[in-house]
Image (cartoon, rainbow, N blue to C red; front, side, top):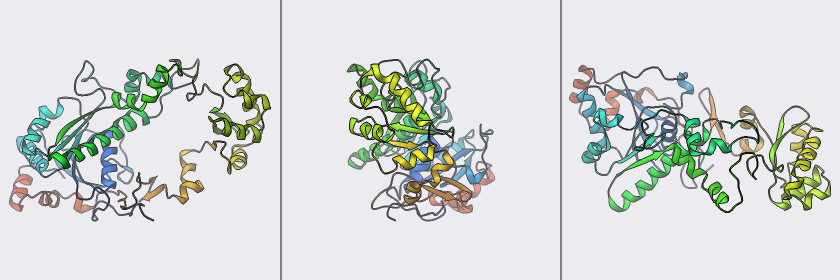
Length: 395
């Protein structure tokens, strides 16, 4: 199937639209590793730099499940010593991209900031991802997805009326506003370099990335179509025809029939009183409409409703668990999930009509061997031996 993953690991020759691209990833947590994983699965050769003095991660995964390391070569360096810093700068000369997710100033204090890196390699694209950006009053502060959503105004908007805001996993700021915006910036900078030959620095922040995801909401507010109170708007559980409802078996269905023609189909099959069809957007009817939908939905199980609505455009879906989603017929037909060793995970995305992905696997022995890695970056056997003897290279 065109565009499907090849199912090979990091040790095989890479394929995909980014084949031949060299990326240096400074090891960290969260969105930068996800961005690096996606670049790897699109064909880039990713070298993950791990510090020899790194402490224990917050969540320690068995290696076969550790997607922060899959699909890469792994090189451990002592970056507290000048020889380790100099080695990384030499590697950056051969790289197309360098990505890091440290607080502002960390790379500069190591002697690896963008100024010196781009002086060595003017074509280097230096991607930086932080919570708050490289400057500003909060730039040096620690935070997590929930922190950035709070400052962006988005956490306030997520949840039900008269209830506390709900953290949306770490999908919105970390992965959406962080990893996806970083990738967009990297690819845009690659296009710019193809025309100018010049690299540049990308300052991506999760607070701004998450805010950008909400740009349409700000537009609705400006037009008077959205208010600044959660649970009262069209897409935030305020509308009874865009919400979840509990079924007879204590599971749920998702109802999303915003358009009148879709709502009419939903009302016909549920069924609902005809007065609701003509008054779908009459907010004075919404409390009664919500109660009517909730009462009807409780009469059948989730899967009974799913079967009833399966061949319609009523925009009704069963709320599947993470495990159930892997086995849904549509996801199976699309091969939307893939197996990598003992790990079942989402398949690489997006798909390309002329390229195939490389499904990332655990780093093979060859991609953990410092000598093999450094030879690919142009170092001699003698230089590698000297670095190993000096303790610059970890195992």
